[in-house]
Amino acid sequence: MQKKDDYRALEARYYMPAFTRDIMLTRGQGSKVWDADGKEYLDCVAGIAVCSTGHCHPAVSRAICEQAKKLIHCSNLYYVPGQAELAQKLTEKTGMTKAFFSNSGAEASDGALKLARVRTGRKKFVAFTHGFHGRTIGSLAVTHKPGIREPFEPLGMARTFVDYGDTDALRKAVDSDTAGVIVEPIQGEAGVIIPPAGFLEEIREICDKKGALMIVDEVQTGMGRTGKWLAIQHTAVLPDIVTLAKGIASGFPMGALLAREGLEFKKSEHGSTFAGGPLACAAALATLQVIEEILPSVPGKGERFRAGLSKYTPRVCGLMIGMTVGDRCGVVQKLCAERGLLVNCAAEGNLRLLPPLVITNDEIDKACSILGEALG
Ligand SMILES: *Cc1c(COP(=O)(O)O)cnc(C)c1O
Image (cartoon, rainbow, N blue to C red):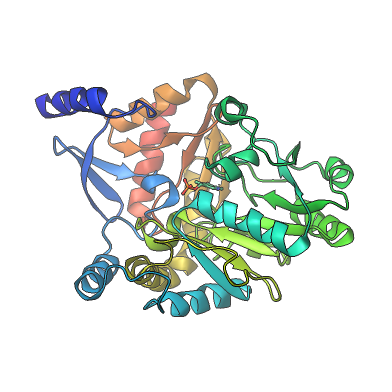
């Protein structure tokens, strides 16, 4: 305990207090993590949908170590080992045509907004209430949550928010100067909010009618999280632009932007020093291979959670699980942690589970039983 108290004091003195936290994790393996005192937890947060292949998957760790011995960085002034192969694999799995890499989800959102503006020649965006797309100045402009956005206004982006699920309002909001509509197929930070049936199809139709691009933010829902490579693949909708990050490289920082035929950045229109570097690409290529193997098991695992938590009417899509708990959310999160289970309170009393995709049936049963005790 002494160790953690010392660390807390060190942080309080030298690190900006932007986070609320109490646990210090020092090691992970599969779906388990251990804190500085050696206490074991079953991890149903997975770095917020990042560690989908589990912690330190041997194939991913090996790929990173091997690449780190060959070439860590080289700059996008040169061909980057792994970059084109990764672009090929991601586009093939998602029905998109070309890729461009970034270092985070927010940067992928920024890239998507830039691409939509430059290719349509239009200025404005429509986004949705309770949506989250990142915290850079660009991505924050289309992120709804007033608490994190308003202190930084004006954000210099013409943008309208429409209620998530309200297609009548969307139809009115999209006009001839709308470059794009940006949407999460399931809202993650809002607490796993699944839109009404037909919503995504209607966005596609409205965008087509008005000549706006449909940007689907799959930063949280993508990379197998919902049982398909993309959540939008549960529908027949083909978006114009898709963004990815979180689960793409098992925790190595990376984001991606995928675009359909005919949409791409031309010379000098976009770039980044670190984006799509050799280490990130190696981590992502290994991650893709692991996810490929476990993807067929994801829907069944989600249904096992649904059955185990049925008393609490969970919202489930693959291994993206939300439950409305209300004011007790923080207490439940703490009780779970005491009992060795990590879960997280997303917005407005919504408890969220985003376990590694490699979680086992026994671990799912254990998570449900601990949650049952904590929820009472
Ligand atoms: C996490 C998240 C982002 C931002 O990703 P960062 O890597 O934190 O910048 C964007 N969109 C969605 C849907 C997310 O869940």
